Amino acid sequence: MNSGIQSAVRAYTEVCRADLRDQLILDHIPFVRHILGRMLGSLPDYVDSENLESAGILGLVEAAGQFDPSRRVAFTTFAYQRIKGAILDELRRNCPLPQKMLQQWAKIRAVSPGIDLPLTSEKIAAASGLSIDQVEECLAAMRLTRPESWTDELCEIPESTDTSQAESVTSRREQARILSDAISELPETMRTAIIMYHYEDMRMKEIGAALDLSESRVCRVLAAAELRLKSTIMRMTSEN
Image (cartoon, rainbow, N blue to C red; front, side, top):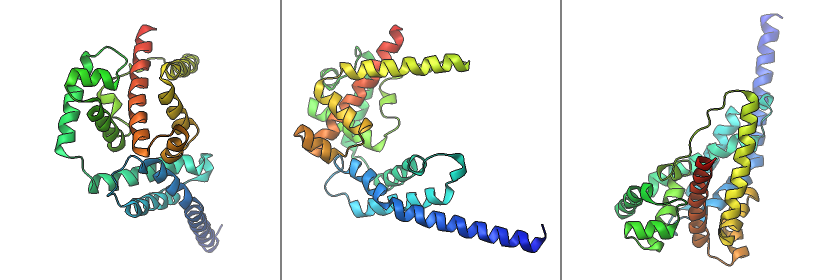
């Protein structure tokens, strides 16, 4: 293939990539709003949702520019963390946690290792001297600002040491069974909220309407449920 044909092919490929990127962006702006909608119920009233949506769209643009359809991964799967991460970065820049909240979090972290599993808001409140409302408010705030790691700071699940593929498959099945058992141990409202949010992909507003709760209360329920769930899994894992 001569250099002229190669240049033409490259130019055509770039045009196709640009067209794909632009179409992905246009098609998935509602996806950005859906992700933001799942977060808004836990945010203070003074938060500028339009500013957060703009940040999410920038995350979408970045994802669309990096997306490679040949990898056979759904674009929504590829883009989700980038969109949510962009929203959270913007949120952290403009809404830092107050010092009082950080002090409460330090108390919670200090007492959590000495509490019998599973961890609950009631147990943490009794051990820390905080009220249950203060504990739940703090957990909800940390859940928002540290979505991937906040529970790891209070409880830690041992990592699997399986090496073979067969052992890995068995381990995943066992983890799925433990997760199912742990969810079944949750109180009914927590169990329903977890299923609606994580498995049915419902917004907090929709969950609140179904459970007759405010959006902020749904956020607190989810935070308490996720903490209890992870610490229950930790207990079950150590028992096996």
